[in-house]
Image (tube, rainbow, N blue to C red; front, side):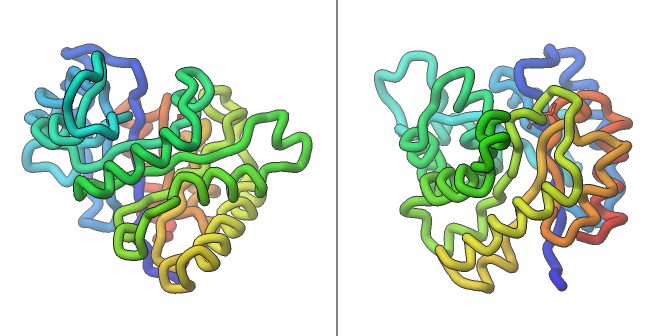
Length: 257
Ligand code: PGA
């Protein structure tokens, strides 16, 4: 029995342009009708954040960033600081996304620095974790999730944890059309929640949102989010189609996670 408010995030990755991104944001802002029963955030590319912030004005959708640098300012060519993101209206930041870990090469130390910096700046963090196909096939799913959760949250206080959402995203399911079965995802989420209870306490574990990501779509969102420990979703491909994303958001409210 929980009273966690579902969280649904739309990770646009390196997609959209100024025209399509703003049109998508406006369609979501006008189509969202959840009466506060769900928290929704979108994560557009950095360069469109300011204009999309205008397109979302007056809506209940929060603006998020796909990444941030942990240092406040200085000689870090190409990087974007948390204060810069706040200037653009950002309230939530992804860390540890599998594409940053496995394509860009971020390790646990970097993911932890970024997670702590986001929390120190007062913003919300969505810490992404999850196993690769090899790791899954060799039975290491829970061990990888435990390792990435412990490493990502190292130095994060009990108070700060209220601004943390954990996204379990099995790497083999991201952008592949393959989805974890609701039962497999539920098992992974339940283990992560137990881990949070041992790292913090039972109340913290009961309160934290653990969301699923990896080819979530209108057709499978309902059965995934009906699971007791799945508190929403982080959506890539389907978040680029306003009707699909709105349908997934409605599923999360209907499940009353
Ligand atoms: P997908 O991406 O929904 O396209 O699988 C999920 C994510 O990367 O967050």
